[in-house]
Image 1: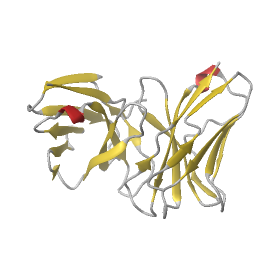
Image 2: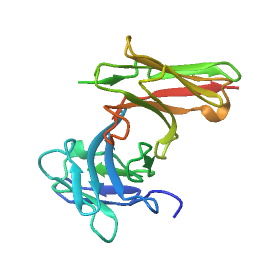
Image 3: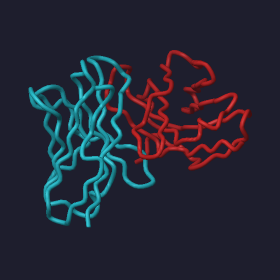
Length: 113
Length: 113
């Protein structure tokens, strides 16, 4: 595992469906972050998690969005009842504890029809 | 409320010349700044950073300058190479080690042979 692994790379959903995006951090990294990039914009922070804990979710929309990082398995960003405005690239990043440098995955591109 | 701004959406530079990418910020609480480089369909990769206690940090062909009084930083790439063609994002955080980065909108750099 050379880097942060995200899947699926591309996901198409119809309005009202659910989207689940998965992220496996780099080996040895216990901190996971989710960022969203809308077209022609910069990345915007959504949520910061450690194993089994949400540390900062100040960037998460109040409804329909949730994230988890269970003791075993990848982190999951879940979007319920998707709308067209949810279409974006969702990037996961990880870091070792206390390290500023974030290592990003290649992103998951969500398209809502 | 765009706290980190990159006012030039694109920049074109001749190979071998200097590329200068600019970034302005408004939040005086920011004291740690980073530059990320992003190729199409890939995640951002860390390039260089600077703490507010410094006004310059150099790493090979890349130098970042920070002017705290003007709330301005710049990334210099010299000499520019074709492989430098990418989108460059400026990011800031309120303290070193803080994991919530605020990104600018990005500048697309094209190096012409």
